[in-house]
Image 1: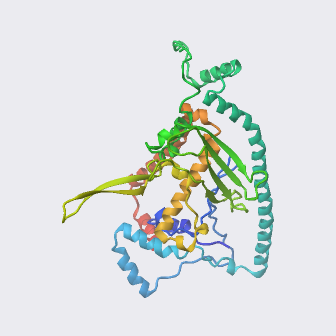
Image 2: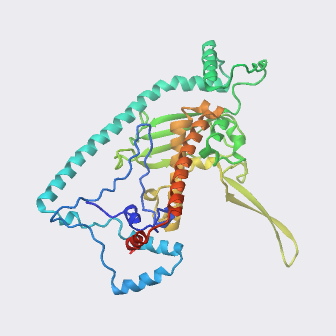
Image 3: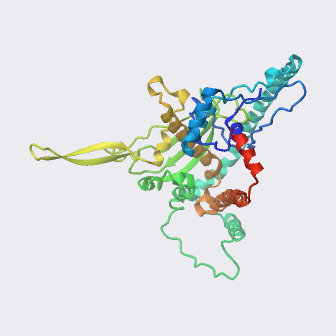
Length: 428
């Protein structure tokens, strides 16, 4: 059955615009896990075809009481009027337009049959996505020797083979790192440098989204990051049968924590989402065993030191307070989604909105590591991956510029009185 949506209402009310902060966050939001096979589908806002004998959705006339409110609303600033309209129209979302109810009984039965067919289609689509996941697991085993060899080269436990050097130099020429006529760089003698220092720290810092969550204090610990691996869940022999994936960060000896590896699990819901894609259920991190006393080595916290003076004795004392700090290592303590929180942890609407944003960021970071950083680590280390990221950003800005040009043309063009009257009728 067709339902009224904020998107369709915005078309009829030019003052309305989609704003994330303009409506309440639902208790549970499906966050679709992007995969290489995903296809982003645009929403279909098809209006029902008008036929003789079928009633079309109509807009109720404004009563006398509502007319007074409308008159008062007309004097409000644009921002306040927009909030008022969005609040009033949000109550219409999800309500039937009345079109399906007006159909003859035999047509309703045919629509019910189509719903049954759609249910069968959804089951097949769910099986399709699960088969894709199994295929990803199969090919993950083929990547494993490559990732192991990469780890050895980065750590300096092995050296490049002649075949790898020849192939790598050919790729450098294709990428334009060495142009014709450019003098060959001086070849330095192999010294005490072992492997590729700060490889993973550099790769992470070259990813725009991940770089934003890395603080200056994090860099010293991330210098000891030796490898990042991906594994699919459930792992063989595990009692938990829920599908998902695991990210494992391997560290060398460092001054901050005693863990040799930090893990983060992302779990999918059992059923695929409306678009046929896997939907995130939750994420689980691990406990970091921080070194030091009073949290001095805990990068997710910082110690505030304040001096307090006694008014009577004029003596001063030093007060230390531990407060949360922005850190990459907060990644291993993910927020709980609303459905996984206890009654004591329930939040109000504003806190749920903030929680929703944190969940989106957390899922996004996990997917970027899974789909891009681990598989193309050397491209992020050299910065090659940024070229493609910038190209995507340029396309977005180009589209925005075209839209702005069209808007400017509309503003410059003189409008006829009849068109102005038509616009006023739409807003009524």
